[in-house]
Amino acid sequence: MNRQEKTALIESLKTDFSAHPTSFVVGFKGLSVSEAQQLRRTLHKNGAKLKVAKARLMKLAVKDNEKGEVLIPFFKNQIALVFAQEAPEVAKVLTDFAKEHKALSVLAASFESQLLETAAITKIASLPSREVLLAQLCAVLQAPMTKFVRVLGATKHRLIWTLENVAKNKQ
Image 1 (cartoon, rainbow, N blue to C red):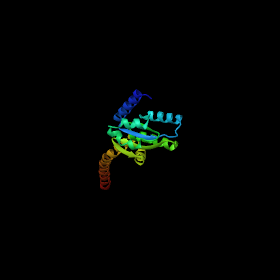
Image 2: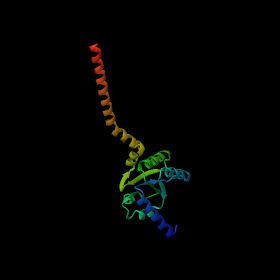
Image 3: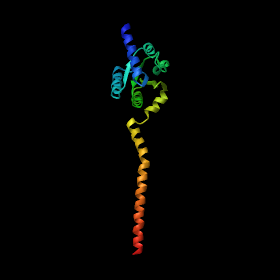
Image 4: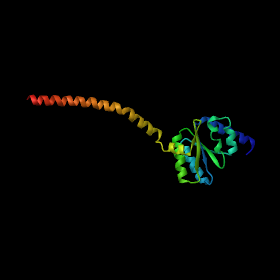
């Protein structure tokens, strides 16, 4: 790799760090090429991208970037960066892939300039998808209105039932 290619890679990493709110550091020592390609495809389907570079170049790319500076201690050995828009979906993909392939390890993540360790990433991965969370929120917001309508309907039905009983008693 010559100097121009390295500069282009550093600029590409800087762009990715600024364009994506979430970035993961994964260790891939011992991962085969076919497994790495499978991981790339799976991440791409979920709107994320995997980039492999030398740790030294990654350090240069995050030098003045607050989103990535928290990850500098994890830039050692064979690592890759995963850039994503949706953290829970990608965290789920990475943790599932790491369970199947022991060579992959999720080391850390930067979510909106905050460092997330492996335990926090696992918790995020266990969260339901965004659509499920929105559906649950709608159900919670809709429940009081639904109960109120039922109470109003039940009051009407009790009044009708009471009037019918009074009419039967008068006969």
